[in-house]
Image: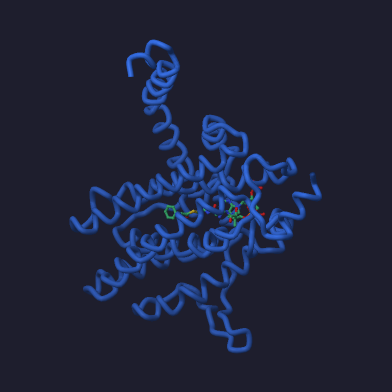
Length: 310
Ligand code: FAQ
């Protein structure tokens, strides 16, 4: 069995839910896919807060669509995760108890409208770079979810960049607001790729299983190289005095991430960790009557009387 599994991985064939897989492969996928799903639905919170305050109907419609997409991404990912033999209730329990992680970046506050631009441009921009690589991941349901999600993420990134572009071309106050949002979201976006390769405990095994196709540092570098020219194009400055083009390596050199801050946020001590988890718990509690009603309806559908009536 193990030899067949290894052979499929070596030949870039997808592993499907009913295929035999090592227990550790199953658990690692539950960990990563569920963390990804949790990131999507927690990621709805900083932006959801701005829907009613969007500056125009056009901006409101685009932001509303984006936040709805994120809810949808969470649902695809939870479904992909359930194919590995864990229930939705267990996944939510892990999120609410703090056992499961979600992306550190969503523990920062969105304080001005420009943050909607910075989140779309930088956070979705970082998410796409990570997720394009995951379209080739070895577990079939995860890879297929990623293809669909990436198409939507690219619209998200563009809507964010367009907000930044508009603000950067606007009044001096608007440009300053865009710069301030870039200053606050730049480093949290770099942290999204996870610890350095030297510190990453899971990368080696995940690369062997082709769960991860590129390392944390490779993806982070790709993000920096792609984003710096975009900032230059709209006349904003990346808040890193050490950022410098390195012609020999054909990419940018850049300053040190504050890893102490990263681990503090990951461990639950970021500016908004408590607020985010309490909002998710509240949503879960408020949705109880809907889940209960759906269960009763599903049970009813199984009865003979119901079947006769339809
Ligand atoms: N935040 O050994 P590694 C989005 C944890 S989607 C919190 O390197 P791995 C869309 C890691 O879990 C964003 N924790 O781990 C959107 C592990 O802890 P554990 C989410 C982090 O898994 C946009 C420990 O550190 N994307 O944004 C973080 O090999 C806008 C050691 O790390 C995904 O989830 C972090 N940043 O690599 C929505 C993509 N980084 O589990 C709304 C899929 C690391 O042992 C608005 N995930 N940790 O307790 C991945 O690609 C990987 O899981 C990494 C981490 C790259 C995130």
